[in-house]
Image 1: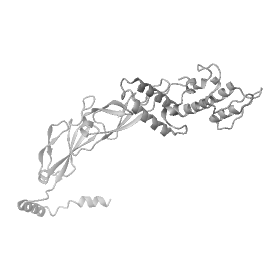
Image 2: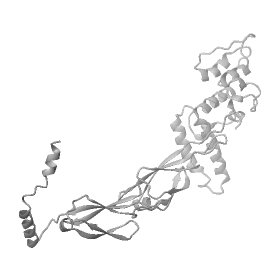
Image 3: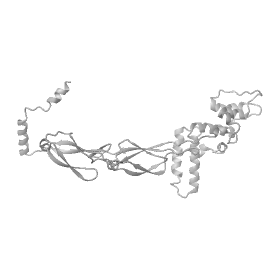
Length: 326
């Protein structure tokens, strides 16, 4: 956008904010208006489309600190904020002070500084002459990439394991987001080119989508490996057994429980985890959890009592106490 246009447009009015608005207030106002006038929300409405262009243009300038300062300076020149008295230099000092803290004086061999000299001082040696913007060369800005937009989403564990496509709403736009299989809790997915629009023809930013994987009562994901807690009886753990356990794909697999197994022992089933991009799948880990019955029949209680008597010389905490002394 040519700098001359800035003198004709009130970007603060377009966004409905005061000239003293903070960067956060500017962003909040823009997002509110963008949701209201976005073309996706107003299909076929030319007036809404034009309004959306205006608020986008206003935000691109006011959200950039350097652009905003230059815009304010130009508006001050054109709107009477800086006075250019014939034969004097006070008005130029007012404008220049906006960029240099107010501690500046203009002197030339011929007396007061000229308008071109002031522009050159503010915006560089190209500011006064030879500009493609009619004497305001300092405003010839390079394309700038748009800002990245951050968002969060929660998905069930099964969807995290298998991968899924979500349709999310970001600043009034519906975006398709592909979630890869096996994504971990807290990991981020980058959606290229769907962030904030670029400035001066620059590329748009990206969306950084943080994924929260909802806990599951049975399964736990660790990369492409799947962990599952498997309840086993005291007898199965003590004597050994064979048990069926579920997998995420809906089938079951059989695992052999070795005799003398304790709680938290891990049994590995290869290839029953989450499939990878090259076809190699992770593994399934069965974590044994010995279940002690809360109620026992007289016969069961008698059997347990007999077991205790037969093993009373074995101290299950002997090694534990020895390790505690290290």
